[in-house]
Length: 85
Image (cartoon, rainbow, N blue to C red; front, side, top):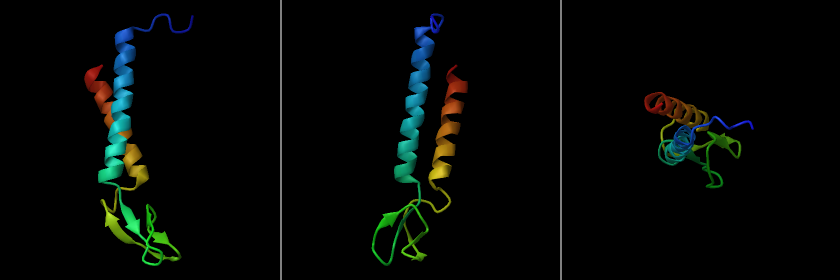
């Protein structure tokens, strides 16, 4: 069997760390990620251009895009794993 030596406690910690990283990603995406509003159609988007024009920052921080949120959540998970394990 492939996983016969996996400790239940360690597996549970890995699951908790993974879930924590996912939760961190969701919170950061909701709170800090830049969202823009298109002045032409009014749509809220993650892009800084829409309908061929520059969009206006609606909420969040301009340097925090989806890639930055993903990087931060991975770093958070890795640091959490180092601390716990």
